[in-house]
Length: 402
Ligand SMILES: [Fe+2]
Ligand SMILES: [Fe+2]
Image: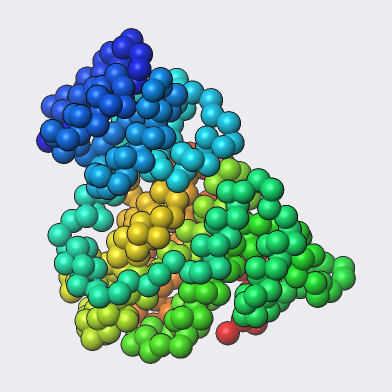
């Protein structure tokens, strides 16, 4: 039985929510509270799996309540169900809630969001991931420049030159940004040599993603990674990220989809560093039996690189859709979804690019991936042929890469 707590200062809204969720009463025990204080009292007496709260309430607002919940009951899933929010409130919600839904909300949507959160939560907090990740003495810290850039974006007054100054403090990131802005991909008429120009041309999010990528891979390349070829893995994740961009360009999910592409195989970093022998054994098993590598990992570790990576990203505080997409990138079908979201974008772009198997020094079968039926089931705004064309065009810019 899962415990769900609904919080809203208006009684009719609480009653309406309970009514809409009545089909789930057998699986969920649903309580409600009419204020932040009442919610905290109830949480002190009962462990809740999920809290769904309004933002604007008298006395203690939703943000204040979620802050308390985050600190005192970090394992409870925090969902905001609220009316219109201004940009400051939205920034606050993103940092405090796992998911945000706007009122009025279809019962099916609320139901499916709660289900998805519970599924991911069970997966990431299951005993297998804990046993594996819990044994690691020191988890990698969130990349430094990336974390600073994240802080900067919250400040409305930040300027391009301030961002450029921060980027310039790291020569590897500076070099990579200039290399990308001048690559064939952007087809610029004139060569850009000034980092400030490059930042304003690429946009803040792309710069942030590049910083993340460089910082992570600079750590990777200096350490032995057992059966993983770090350069090939880096190329793979960059290709998936670019493919995800091509499928989500000009939509609200493009930033998260690109970030998910870049980070989806980060679990290999942990497995290769912490348990290189077991990872080697998984690779040998997959090669010998010609089975999917992530399945061989699950046989050996109890979980795969996907769940391990998602767990790390959760600790880093990355956006929830990114964590979810990473956790399920080899098994997107286990999430019941009927819209083209970050997970779907990652799964499709992963299937249309050379897969994880290309990053290993072994004869592994190609990744299974998803197909046209899956794409249709998530009601993507394009068909499989168009997806193939968009990704193929994007991958052309990688030709000649190692
Ligand atoms: Fe993977
Ligand atoms: Fe991958």
